[in-house]
Image (tube, rainbow, N blue to C red):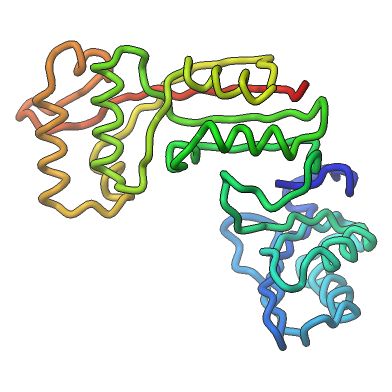
Length: 264
C-alpha cells in the first residue's frame, strides 16, 4: 500500500528510471541499483542512517548505468524500526518511495482514512476471513478512496464451488477459500464500498507447471490429476479439462474476478 497523498507519481520510462532497493540493518544498509528486470544489480554498502551516502551512491549509480543526472529514482524497503522517517526523507529528495509493511490483512496497522487507493491481487483466497479483510480496507480508505481487487473465484454452482476449492486446497494447503462473485459483492456492500466495476475472466493452468510451482510431491501430483480427470462430465466441461491421448492431464481453466469499489 502506498500513501499517494505524500508523493507525486513520476512517469516511469523503463531504462530512464533508476530503481533502488534497500536492505536495512542495525549497522549497515545495503543499496541495490538497477534499471529493470534481468539486470544484475549494483550493490553498495553504507553505514546505517548515512543519508548523505545515499545521495552519493545515487549519483554514482546514475553515472555507472549511464542515466541522466535528473533521471527519476524509485525505491522500496520493508518498514521496521527505521519507520517512516526514511520514507519522508526520500520523498523530500524527489525519490518516489514505497514502504513494504508486513501486517495482518484482517487487522491493518494504519489509521482510519489513511489511503487514497488500495489494491490486492490474487491473495484473499489465502485469508481466513475475507469479509473482515474488506472491512479493514474500507476502514483505512479515505472517503471517495478506491479499492481494486483481483482474485480467483468459485462458481455459484455448489458442486463446482466444492470442486474448485478442493483442487486449490489440495495443490496449496495455505489456500483458504475462493469466494463466489455474490460473496465478494456482499463483502463490498456491507463494508460501505460502492461497486463501480465488475469483470470476470478465466485463466488456463498447465497442470505440470501449476503443480511444480507449488512444490507438490510426485505422488500427490498424480493423485490430484486422477481426481480432476475422474470428475464428472459437468465438472470437466466447466473447467475445460484437457488430456493427452493417453489420458494424462494437460490443463484446466478456472475463474477470476476483478472488482472496483469506492468508499462512500
